[in-house]
Amino acid sequence: MYKNRLFVLLLTVILFAACKKQTEEYVTASISDYMPLVKGKYITYQLDSFRYVPQTLRPLVITYQVKFEVDDLITDNLGRPAYRIYRYIRNTSNDPWVTDDTYMAVNTGNSLELIENNLRFIKLKEPIAQDYTWKGNAFINTTSSSSDFNLQYLDSWDYTYDSLNAPLNLNGINVDSTIKVAQRDEIIGNPSDINSYSEINLGVEYYAKGLGMVYRRFLHSEYQPPTGGHDGYYSDATKGATFTMIDHN
Image (cartoon, rainbow, N blue to C red; front, top):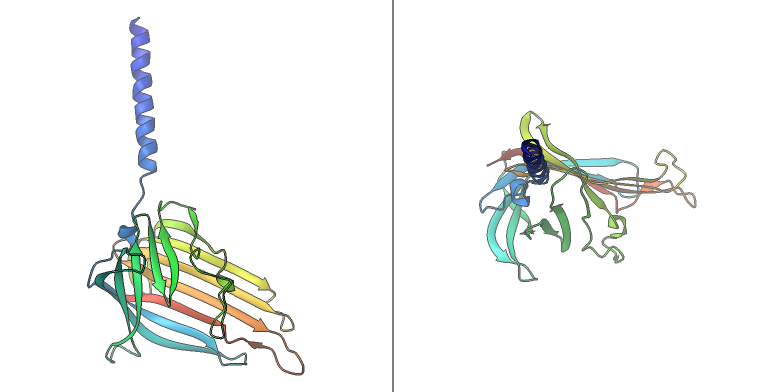
């Protein structure tokens, strides 16, 4: 009888410990840990903007400094609490900041939505766990197009947590804990073949605990091959940008 009671007691302890460990393994960080929306919070980036000279194969890179600063708590068009974010721009640190654009960020409780140029992206989503995937562009109508832009290339992007709690060095600035969001890494056709169409779509972002987004790289390129005696060229839809944090508060 004593041995049976001892066995039951040991089994209970083992099951309790296993359940506790399993519960702890599923406790993840929250959206606000990696994207704190607090009035006055800002991050400054070096922005390397990439394009091609129209109708040519000549790349053009222009470097700026941009600052994203959280402003007041407002309400979005769905009646939800949202934060307005101002973007400021300048050529160098010697120049004054000039207001450049306005964004809106919504922490829904289990996701972070960013509205940029009337496009709603789901930048982060819980649970923040390795290999967790979601449709980050689900709210974007990728079938619409106009003379200004075509959004079909944003269709069905799978955002995935590629690495968690990893350190990152940004031009000498050490960040202790980041999460990597791999958004897209796609090549259509053969970019090395100048006689055929090709397309490249790339998107990746890093978020640091207590800071927000500290690095972003985006590229969409469309190469048009030679036709009718005209040389090949990259279309006006081709664009890229790299944001690298250089300062924060």
